[in-house]
Length: 146
Image (cartoon, rainbow, N blue to C red; front, top):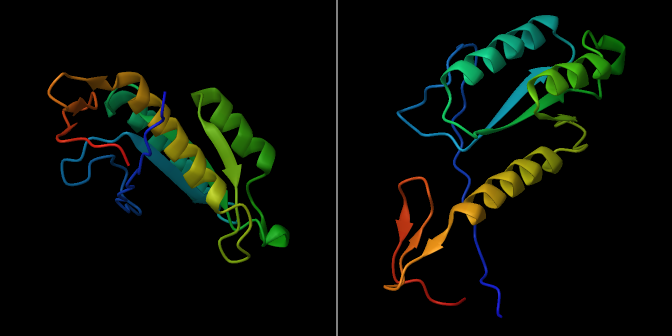
C-alpha cells in the first residue's frame, strides 16, 4: 500500500506576558511554552500557564515546555532539573534551547509537530466521496495521491 505524503502547516500565536491561552478563538492542537532560564519569573509564569491550560484547553492538546537561553549558563536562575521536574509533573515534553547559539532549536518544533500528526492520523477517516475528516471539525475535499 502506497503511503500518502502529508504536509503539516504550523500556525503560531505569540502571547507574551498575558496569562491566557485564548488567541483569536483558535482551537489549539499544540502549545509550546517557552521560558527564559536566566529569569526566574518567566519560569513561575509558565507554571501558572500550565495550570491555566489544564483547566481551560481542549482535550488532548499537546504541550512542550522549553527553557531558552542556555548559552547564558553563568546567568542561569532556573536549573535544567527544575524544568524537567515541572514538565514531568504536568506530563509534557521538556527541551532546553539556545536560539542565539542555534542549539536544539528545531527539536521542540519537530516533537510538537510529530505529536500533532500522530493525533490527527489516529482521527482520520476517509469517506467514500474522497473527503478526509481530520477530527477537529476540519475536512479536506478532493484528495489525490501526491
